[in-house]
Amino acid sequence: MDIVTREFFQSALIGGILIGITAPLMGLFLVLRRLSMIGDTLAHVSIAGVALGFLTGVYPVAVGLVFALGATFAIEKLRKAYKTYAELSIAIIMSGGVALASLLFSMGKGFNTSVSGYLFGSIYTLDTIDLLLIGIVTVIVLAAVTIHAKELFLLTFDEDAAAVSGLPTRYFNFMISVLTALVISVSIKIVGALLVSALLTIPAACSLVIAKSFRQSVITVVVIAELAVIGGLLIAGVWNLAPGGTIVLLLIAILLLLLSARGKFSA
Image 1 (cartoon, rainbow, N blue to C red):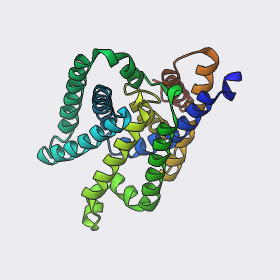
Image 2: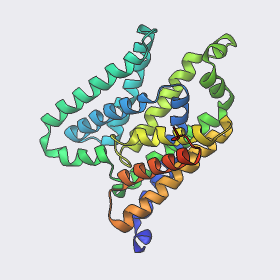
Image 3: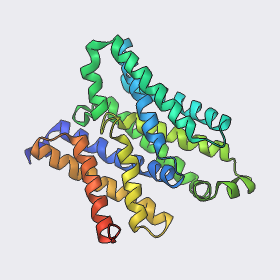
Image 4: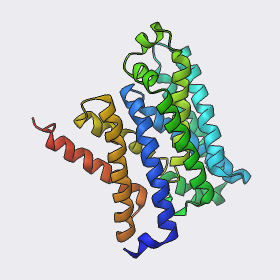
């Protein structure tokens, strides 16, 4: 357990704990609104931004963040264009993100090894700038959710009623998307773009099994995510395993245990 005292592991732990708050919190709103695939979409678009960052010599996470925010605007525009088939917007943007990323990979073969860290996570390489960015995003997300808790609750469970009551639903829909883009952009270096959606959705899936109210769900998603992040990092550190994959597999194990305990697997 000497690894716990090492600086790189402590940085990983701090970053993981912060993401363990924001990612499942935003994921809960997405899952309850049946928009969980947005996480995957923004993660793939972010990777295209990361690749461009390496290609141009600009801080990759910052470029990935710009791309994710751009994708958020595009998704909202397409959702308005295809009101009856709103999920098409997610599929279109995801396809574009994957295509652009593959194009940028082919243009900069020399940085493919570096980009792979963002695909599968490289939490042990977090530096001061990464932690500062993660901390800023955490503060923004917590402030937004705390200030607009009632509005987000109403929007999540009955958007039509929220609109009738005069709530600016477009503004809050966009706010949720932007906050999600921020969280995903700073999360991909921790668990990787291919696994980030698990941190968004699996804690929410766990809360649907055991939580009896929205407030309980908020607490549950954060507690489960933190257990998985801290436990996954410790297991990965001791056994020399991939930390991102270990965290996600631990989340899945927790979900399976909860489902089994509730008899959800019974015939």
